[in-house]
Structures are given as structure tokens and as C-alpha cells.
Image 1: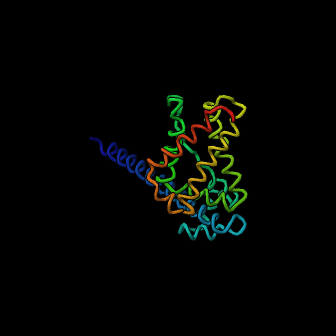
Image 2 (image 1 turned 60 degrees about the vertical axis):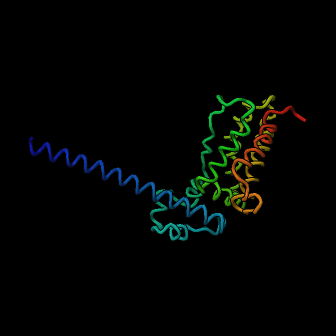
Image 3 (image 1 turned 45 degrees about the vertical axis):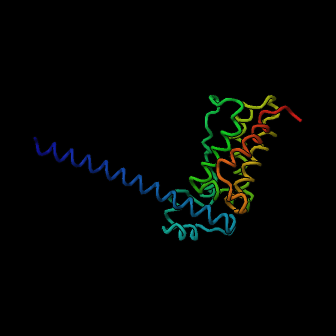
Length: 205
């Protein structure tokens, strides 16, 4: 085999590996910054939180925060943006939509802390609250329109669903009320599934 070919292949492989490692480091850095930012915005509020404090919490140089997010406003926008990754309910039996939503949100709350951190930000900061409103409005509204008997009622029905889900999250994961924390996931689905189902599909009272 030609030596130049071997060297070229080796260099290409090495470059690809280094690029992969670099991308992973970049993703890890972004994740650390966003986690620190959510905690800091929740505890200090937007005005008092500083890039320097967030960088210290993330154990990185402040210049890295600026490199990825530009300024505090850009960082805040990224910290309170979230994809609820709602399941496609088109294939879900209409009578099971409520249970499917509760099951999905329980998995999201318990498998990562991002949404819980965002809830804390939303509870203490006007900008965070507006972002949370937008996330739930924009992502839950299509579900409500699809499920409810009167599309004009979709905003009210989506709001009731959001109130139920966020109330659960607040008492179970933020305030940690013992009776709510003690409930098994199956119990929560059994209790709340029919409630969300009624909000979405029952005739208007």
C-alpha cells in the first residue's frame, strides 16, 4: 500500500475523530451553561443574574458564554426555550388522549430537570413566565384543537390542561408536597388522565 495513502487515511480519520470530540465538548459546554443559567435566573432573577456568575456556576470562562450566546438576553432566550416533544396523538384513540399526555409529561419531568428548572424561572421572572406561556400555548394548542369538539374553545381547554400539568409539576418537583411526591406514576395517570380527557373532549359546561 502506498505510504501517502495510508497517511492520508490516518489523517482523515484523526480529523474526523477530533471533530466528533470537539462537537461533543461543545454540546457539553452548552448544556452546562444552560443548566447554570436556569438555576441562576430562577434564584436571582433576570436583572441580578450575571454572565460572570453563570460562568462560575458552569465552571467555564465568561468568554465562552458570550461566544455561544452573545449576551445575557440571548442566553436567557436559550435557557427558557424548550421543545415539549409532544407525541403524535393522531394514532391515539380519542378516549386515551388525556392519559397519553399525563404519561408523556411525567416522563419528561422525571427523566431530565430542564423543564423543572424552567418552571422555577417562570415562577420568579416575568420574561420566563412569558416564555413558558408561549411554549405551552404554541405546543399544546394544536393538541386541543385536534381533540376538542369546538375549535374555538381550544385556547381555554389548552389553558386548563396546562394548569393541571404545571400544578402537578409545581407540587411534585418544585415545592415537593409529600402526598404528591408519594404518588406512583401509575396513580397520577389514573387520577389526572380522565381530568385532562374531560378538559379536551367533554362538551362545554
